[in-house]
Length: 357
Ligand SMILES: [Zn+2]
Image (spheres, rainbow, N blue to C red):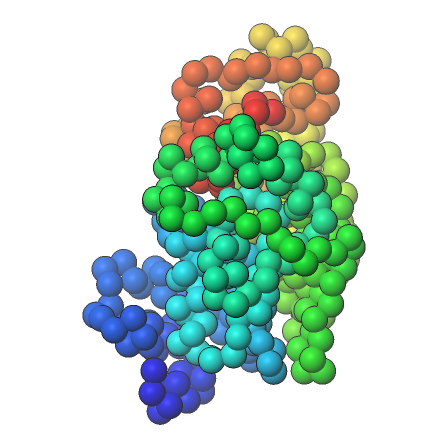
């Protein structure tokens, strides 16, 4: 990219120029569908957000961010390998600074399977220590000889066939701080939520928060590896940071209220499952799922978090998980169709081999 267009981009910070820059960098015409992929957004000086696309065949599935420090770039989430390559091309169109760190907000494939790509480009994957504990639990193909989640995801994603799992190698038990005097980013573990290894990236000067999947903005909550009851408390601690701009793990960039909405969804889900399903034995409880869905859909604050019946329906497994948390009883399968739907959704998060939760 030539100096003039780079300066022009840095001054303007528009997605259109980023797209042109990327096409120039890659040495070809703007590819079809690039408009969606080009949406890297300058949200504050030196701080970028990129919205992913939750579908099986997307390159960049989770949302990303990156912060350009004086001497290096810190990337929020490694994405899948194809997403990692896409982010690197976008960052390279903006700066020659080394992409030194890739922070995995948690262990799921759409946030961490691109680690090896960052390593090959001079980066180091960074995460809360819980990410390693989760990887030891689920990535049995890497730590043992039994195929685990990576191997399962590789059946559906070509980009996993040409690379490998790379667990994070810089680990922090509670917090890790990046501060060069101009920018400050605090990586913080706030408690059990979406997984046992979640951490957020908090930028106290700009009041920007990258939440990972502790918070999503839409029907994207995968609850199989976490604890919905404790998640609500972790969201309380997340809200106390005082963020004004909230970049969630999936879905459109938002503001502080998305944390309230996500928490209200889980609270309402627990209330409804507790009132309607928990007093009933599993076989009877199962028949109440659509009733609960209709009730939650009727609440404007949280309706967007409630899945709709279909291939990517996230709602039945959420109900199932909460029922099991509240009663200690297994709800077993919520019907064959729903099992398939759950698997499809889980696969898009790199969790296809999750045991029914
Ligand atoms: Zn996740």
